[in-house]
Amino acid sequence: MSYELFIAKRFLKANRKRGMISFINTFAILGITIGTAALIVALAIVGGFEKELKEKVIGFTSHIQVTGFQNKPLQHYQETSEKILKQVSNVKSVSPFTAKEVLIRSKENIEGVFLKGIEEEEAKSFLNKYLTEDRSQKSEVGSFQPQIINHKPQIILGKQLANKLNVKLGDKLIVFDVPNMKDGIQPRAKQFVVAGLYETGMSEYDDVVAFTDLHSAQKLFQLESAVSGFDVMVNDISQTGKTSKEIQKLAGYPHYSQTVFELYRNLFSWLELQKKPIPLILGLITIVAVVNIIGALLMLILERTKDIGILKSLGASNNEISKIFLVQGMFIGITGMIFGNILGLSYCLLEQHFHFFSLNANVYFMSTVPILLKWENFVIVSSCVLVLSFLASLIPSRAVSKINVIDTLRFA
Image (cartoon, rainbow, N blue to C red; front, side, top):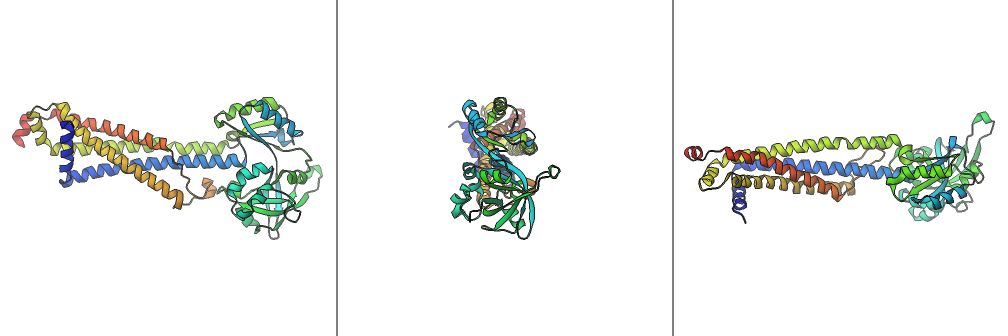
């Protein structure tokens, strides 16, 4: 062990017995701890928002959605979907859907909703994750088999929508397809049975979106074998834009390909906006860390002026003495970093399990605070704290070179 490190450790032990110095060191460590924890929690929440929103939005739509120009039905969709699967390498799956605005009437109420008819596999992959009632019948609900309940087609509603309609599992509903009245076509009606309730925490979906099987939707909308479009899932989400252009070129008119980021541009722009305060938070943490460490070391140097004079008279160089205070500055930074990581991680884990804070789903698209823990966030934050601690420790440690040995020993 070098003698600089040995003396630094002796100074740290002695500091605990000096009330003011001990308080300043503790305050400096506390400031770095809170700042580190705040940044870790902020990154975890922003990451959680991004992951949760992407999962829910993509689950309800897809990475890429192909529809007809001016919402015209697409004929011969099997040929087009097979062509996309075979010739576009990044495409993972293609699922046809039929979607349209309808009216749903229960015994007590009537609501306008967006009804989407999907295939069995698509239902199982997403809806079952968010089903909140009668989970024991998950396999039946996910299958969307019209023959299961009294030979009536099934429908899955958002929990909030079900509350508005005042219906529960097994209740019957009348779904009206209301065409453009200018065409002189009479509204069509079909009876459905409530087979499941889902809840995502996003009122944009829970209030207005209902699901049924593809065949029942086609019959209601009198599309025969046509569909409204395709939900396309990709292997590499970073190549979504490029893949969408390939699909558009391959499918051609009347197909219209859009990525989920184009369909929900405002939502993802809002998400990017949430990331912008992070540099400001990091800047505030920088200021707090630098000021606390500089203040603590300057006070320590003033308290140790006599000891510095003695070390210089014994032949210690300015660089060697500077290393002693540099070690103490790094001790403050490392201690604050460790406690900050522990505090931030503890809060994130507790929030994940107990959900201390609730959110307004109408504003934030979810009812609880989402948390996403990524080890790289801890590495980045810890590295920043260590670098800042080192740089902040250099400033006061250089003040040692200005201390005069003779004056120090004379007036000590």
